[in-house]
Structures are given as structure tokens and as C-alpha cells.
Length: 311
Image 1 (tube, rainbow, N blue to C red):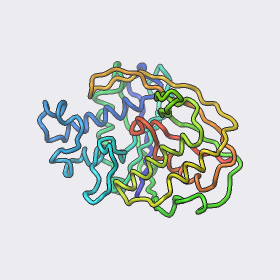
Image 2: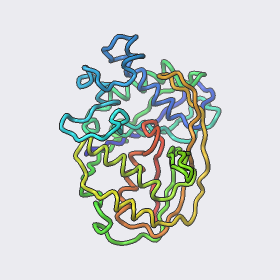
Image 3: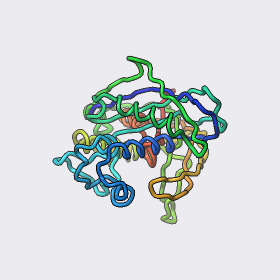
Image 4: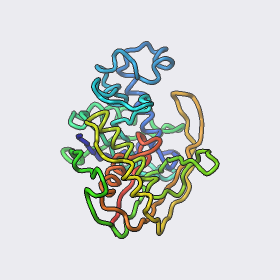
């Protein structure tokens, strides 16, 4: 499975005020304008019947559908809830940005593409980001920006193979005494409490990080690459025995407006990081790639990214 990483900068043209996490604003604006530019459905049906592209007869030949909402290959084994499939694109701007954005501020933007899209020319996507930055801008004050990408640099393509991910703890024996997880964006996970209700997880154990990492990676392989033969039950059981020894996790909350559903709601998650002791070595590649590919809710907007630090 091919994975491309491209680093760019958003240089602010007109200052203003923005929320600390601009990921939803960037991703929502780019996706909305990209779809408007290429969608072949009538405009009234695009905002009613075709708010989600699944089932659209033009999907296979649509540049928006192929990049933002692709269906799996016809022969792929899909999972229940395919309408919430893991997407192959992540737009992850730097977090946090200052509340007051001055002119000239440069905000790093990391773009991650997975599957066949990773090998394609990213120029149409970059052009769309540049266009919406200048023409529309972010937030209610329409903070405009220009996109900067250094010529010939900043883009890397990796190949992640099934054999790079240990299928079982015994496949990579050994234990790491201390492993740090440093979140680079809000992590939006929900866990079921003792009363059966699901709540935002504000202090994740290692298994709480591994579960969504396994889910993201395996679904991407299954939908856009090939099925993994890993024993997920045993890998999760190994993570359940790991102790958290230090942490600086703090709750995160930010309001969000969905232009697609016209609903306003609050996003709840966590920021910070933690240190975990006696981590099975076999879990390390899963954790590294989980952080690179992002996990949990709103991962397409850059949520759920982290770095792994070996102490």
C-alpha cells in the first residue's frame, strides 16, 4: 500500500481570528469546493440526495469521489458500516494556531494520501487548496491564505507492506521499557463507561490508542490494498497489559459548524500525551503508522495524529 506525505505552508494574507484547531475548516472548505467544481449531479440533489457519494453512478470517474470518498474495489471484502469507510486523504494543519492570526503567519500543513492516489500528481488538489485560500478563506472572518510548496521537496512516498506489521506478538519478541505518545492534534475517541454510556476518552491507555490504529490501518489495506492476516484479538490483549506511568493528557473542546448538515455542535477530545511502560515490541509498528495515518473521529481533518518517542 502506497502512502504519500506532502508538507506545505499556509501563509496568511488577511489576518483575523480562528479557532485553535483549523483542521475541520480547512478540510471542509477544500472538500466542499472540490465537489462543487467537478460533481455531475444537479446542484439541488448534490446538497440533498448526494451529500455522501456512495452509490453515485459517476463515482468511479469523478476526481472528487476518487480522492475524498472512494468505494472499495469490487472484489474487496468490506466491513459493516461501509458508508463510514476510512478515507485515503488527511489534511492536517498545525495545531494549535493562535486565536488572533497576523498577516504573514505561516501555518504548516501536512497532506497524507493513501493507496493509488499516493502515486498520482497532487497538483489538482494543491491548486484547489490554493484557490479556496485566496477566494474564500477560513472561518467567519474569511481569513485568506496562499499555499506554499517548495519545488521538488516536501513530498515523500512510502510503501507499507503487510510483513512490516507484526501479525502476532511472537512475530517481534521483546519489550520496550518506556514508550511515549505525543499527540500532534486533538484525539477524538469515545469509550464505553461502566454504566454502558459512551463518553469522550480523556486519558487513553495504550490499548485505547492501539484499537483505532488497528482499525484505520486494516481498513485501508482491505479497502485500498489487501487484507491483513494479523491476529487483532491477541495484539489488543497484549496492549491491555501495558501500564501508563506518566501523562499530560488534558480535555479538549471546540465548537464546529457543519455546512453539509447545517448543524452546530461541540467536539470533545484530548490533547497532550502519555508514557507507557513494558510495551511489547510487536505493537510499535502499529502505533507508529497509526499516528502517521491518524485515527478516530475527524481523522480526515487531521485529528488523532501522534508521534512515538522511545525513551
